Amino acid sequence: MKKMLAFLFLYFGSGILGEAVIIAGLAAAGYDPVHGEMPSEEIANLIRYYGFGIYLIMAIWYCRCIEKHKLNSMGFQKKIADYLLGSVMAIVLLGIIMGMAFVCGGIAFSTVRGNVSWVYTIALLVGFMIQGAAEEALCRGFLQTSFMKKVPIAIAVLLSAIAFAVPHFSTLFAAETSALWSIRVNVEWK
Image 1 (tube, rainbow, N blue to C red):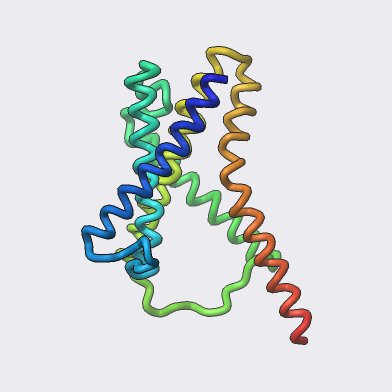
Image 2 (image 1 turned 60 degrees about the vertical axis):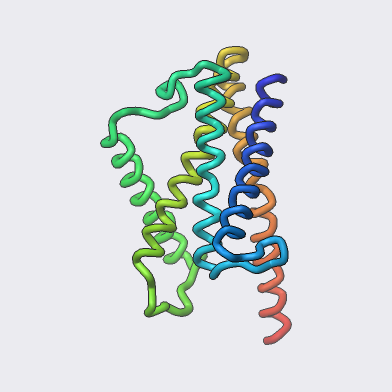
């Protein structure tokens, strides 16, 4: 129970700290985020994903200083080649999934923007990597590792998977509601 409470503290505490840092940074840059004044949509997206760096830092800090874990016990390795191989495998698998969804009609491309910013695209990919690393550090590096000392591995994996999935439910349900709404609108307009 203490590990789950520590996880919740880390998760919500990092979120609050991250929001405070972002609000302070935007205010220092001349924006008024409290009253809805924000930078462009692209910059706001980058801020959201790079903000997960706070989660990553807090998870590493907690595990190193409080739990006395070594970085390699959290899944961090010194071999960059392992990370690159994992990234290539993820890109290939994502490409296969997207290709299958396209062939089966699950996704369709309606327009292609000619003004794609490669700098923004690369910055967004780095942001996704930071977000993913933060989720891995919290759910697997901290929570699963801590649970494995107390319960069987299968239960530790299940509990960390649930802890990973729960924050994503709101996004999943929002997408489902949005998709249903657009289907209804399309049906009504025909």
